[in-house]
Length: 260
Ligand code: SF4
Image 1 (cartoon, protein in one colour):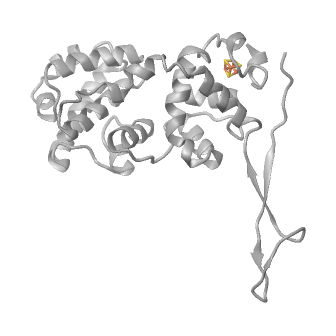
Image 2 (cartoon, helix red, strand yellow; image 1 turned 120 degrees about the vertical axis):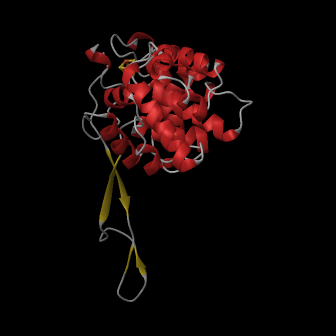
């Protein structure tokens, strides 16, 4: 049974200039406290090992795998955004199936705008909240046609302003479609696992809260890796209910292992 572990804070010394312009260092200096979770680096290494086969659904069915590689770049970006919109509250396999049916029709802004709602609903069913998504896809496609010449916007603020596009989708769209890391994309898997591993200073109630808490301490160079890594880990081992703690390399390091 793993022992409960205390949280730790890393202490950093900051040097300030003295009145004569020289830098002072040492005991008299103010100390800036930067919190980070205990043993997160070892936990991350273990997750990388557990994910080394890259054989989780997200690894071959994620949004970046759901577009037509022969389509023009702006059409591919639109297809990626659409896959992300379909993916909320939906298993990767179901999203991929819906995307295959849409791609078979030739998936562009114009083709979606020319498809009636009833037909679009049948094509994307049974993705979660498919009725609302029909509405959002139509509204977003019309905006993309009018304001962005059929492309998707290249800023986080403009992406989240589109109907049906939340922060997680926007961060992923920036990363996958534009190759820009704008923040950590946090879905239910990342939210759940970050809380189980106590990677947030205190329990967080929403993915957005978790994103802000992770971005406070997780080195920026890891931001793009963390979503795919933890989503696959959540699909295969740290399951929503009945996580497979017995087979998890983090069992001895995980503050939540004993609660399952
Ligand atoms: S020990 Fe269990 S709860 Fe902790 S990270 Fe592993 S699977 Fe998840």
